[in-house]
Image (cartoon, rainbow, N blue to C red; front, side, top):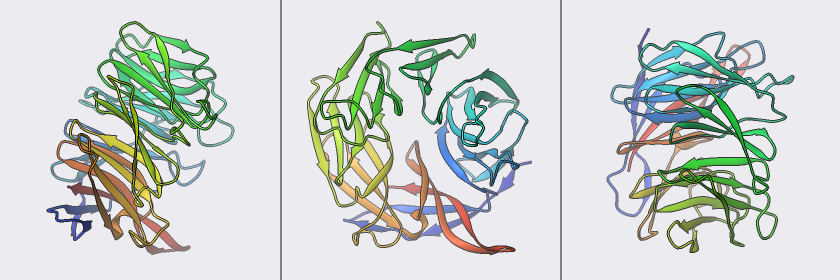
Length: 337
């Protein structure tokens, strides 16, 4: 059953002139949201569940209205990552509790029916997915390999390379799959690898600026990923040139997403610039100019997605009183920069 969420308009704090608006959708029934994606009409949230006995859910939110639907199934079991291709939502399950029994399922967007794609054997978390060409790509399956799943036939292959060094995070554009890691590289602290979707060639992109990469995005012109010390790194795809974009708002940048025009970086703050809570930094992809958006409704962010003209963030906005004490109250926050 579709349920209408409570939408609360919020006045943000923006460095520089802005018409930015923020709306928080509460009462989504989220327990421990850990991932978010957006495509077409919907925003999708993976809710891990409170413990091993609560199997979690995937929550579908209609972007235009905030109405939401909880999707549960024996094939939704502690979901920890998800991605949508417009026809299906692909969900990683079962990798966050010990003993780990990971598997991938998919939700038919037209019917909400959940089916099994593949059981997996993995030593660690499977938390990065990418859609590239005909395939779903999955990291963390087996070092040094990525899992490639044909989205039509569901046949699977492993793509291996000595350049895949573990703990990878993935992004894709029309021509390349990008594999970032907080290991490897020139200094052993971070690496970026490019896999051609046409030829399958794997090539390292080297820079001493790559440092502690935990997320990556590509807008087809440049690849962006946070580094340590208040830096986001920009790689020009055509030339390979690497530059650093610095801001105090990049305090602990854990999520990044992009459009052709803008790059959005969601950070957990530990300095005085944004006060208590998180900061969303909007970077103009052409000029590298910045705008910083803060709000109490960006506290303890759990994920970031972009859909059309809106940015979506899962946030733990307040502490509510529960029967056993204070509990976190999660909201889906819509930002219109």
